[in-house]
Length: 448
Image (cartoon, rainbow, N blue to C red; front, side, top):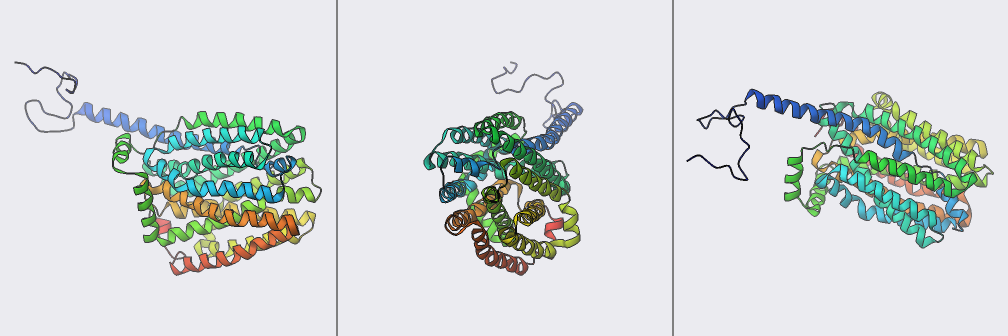
């Protein structure tokens, strides 16, 4: 009696089951099976290449944040003091701290694409809340959703691009390519802050409406990404890995590779002081009688400087190497912060722009160092830990600068930030030296 096909039987094939010699149990790769597999792989690689192209567009759009250079002035116009603004920012970073690693683990287990989609939804909710808030509680809630959006995005975005390149065998291009992505993002940010300044002169509401439109478009882009890991591997990983297990393993990796932890701390601290000065300079320049449009122009130049420096950061790193980077960047940054605080109107802007060069160099160089030393399956989780350190530093430094600025003036607030920055940076640099970061060839040659 002939076999009756069941619900679990393979579909009938006129040449038998591909890959199996009829009448025997011997497996081999049937020519049609090879062609099919080749076509599937070709299609998959095309999607990974599409990821990289979409990555450029996505990064341009998420950086087209019209409210980025006006939110401090906006909150001030709603009656918020610098101290209250500092508290709201502290709430943002407390929320970031609590959600960073769990959202990174979610991205590693359930997919970077899903994480990016949720990130954009959270950003949309945040913009709506910010539009209609009139008190500290309302702004704090808006900041919580903003933090959630950024944590969902932070590890997932970089991981998706790096792993797409890795599966295509192009991971060595990451530092140069990522610098280009950053440059385009910063050009976008420059145009955005100019747009935001012009719109805010007409009314802050127009800036936030524009923000909503951009975030909606970005959400549509995020839905078109493809996961770099094959679906079967992702599904298998969901079954055997929990979020707590993912976090525990990632922490173990950091303990075993302490150099990664100190690289993360270095990058996070550079970003912390840069972000603090960047945001408070909105109000600081206003006290120097700059108009909103003029402030936007300064911030646009900052973004362009950041982007251009990021574009060619790999060339600077090739000349200075690790030793030069970890020694020179903190020194230049410290001089620039003090320069912003103590200089006159014109020179304060020049020192402010020097800080953009430091950040522009640090971002792609340290992103490459860190990515090259961590396994793909833990990449988003560990990269989220960088944002976790950033949030920890910001929880301390940002409200403190706000408090001192409110009582004693912003110049003293900026100078006081260096009393935390300098000792911490000395500690980190000494640890990197101890772990032979400077001569560590793994950062150049080994991709885990």
